[in-house]
Amino acid sequence: MDGEKIRILIIEDEKPIADILEYDLKKEGFEVMSAYNGAEGLNLAEKLRPKLILLDWMLPDLSGVDILKLLAEKYNIPVIMLTARGNIDDKVYGLSCGADDYITKPFDLREVNVRIQAVLRRFRKAGEEWQGKEGIHKEGIQIKDAVIYVDERTVIQCGEPVELTPKEFDLLVWLVTHPRFVFTRTRLLDEIWGYDFAGDTRTVDMHIQRLRKKLHAGDRIVTVFGVGYKYVSKKD
Image (cartoon, rainbow, N blue to C red; front, side, top):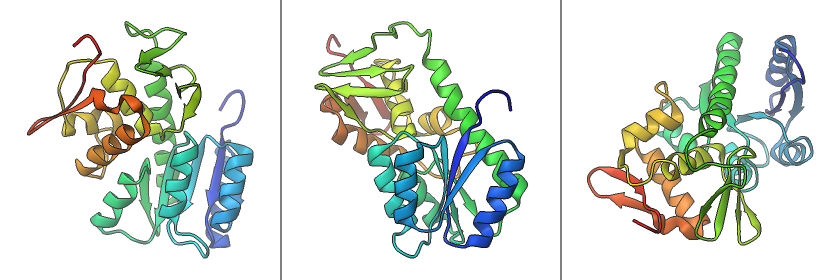
């Protein structure tokens, strides 16, 4: 990789697994740091602001899902869950809590690297796709008392930042930049999470609920019963 190295944080209590991941990812050209419990992981996330986090589900002090929720409240960082829990309900739960992907142990290091590259690529592509769309400018997109700054991937509401997860941000921008269009949950999964997403449509509902809770403009995201969701502007 050219230029500045991409920083990855591993939060994994089994040191041999963390060491193997760290060694392999460094060979791939990433800058890698490891934490062996949840508290240390949250501290490093605050200090390092990594571009991606690999997060173990089972940790000695906090569950990975609890950490995921705390991360989602504060940072716009994609997270890949690492876990031995492979049933579909666990996958759906982890993904609906804000994870961007889910890797089941034991895993192949090649799969881990490919999934990391895929998440980073989707994250980068989402930001690029919003640029140049009609109505999107450097000064941001105004919705009620909130402004979306697409290039910076931030939302400011009443002068204060609104902490959105990467998928919450992408979903919000997609809806806002396609006003009046009704999107099915399946279409939103394809557009925001990608065709290889392992979850189901409940994930969309969970993210819509959180957007409505976090934004004063949440009432602009309208449920079209039996179909899906749409964004309505003030003039509609």
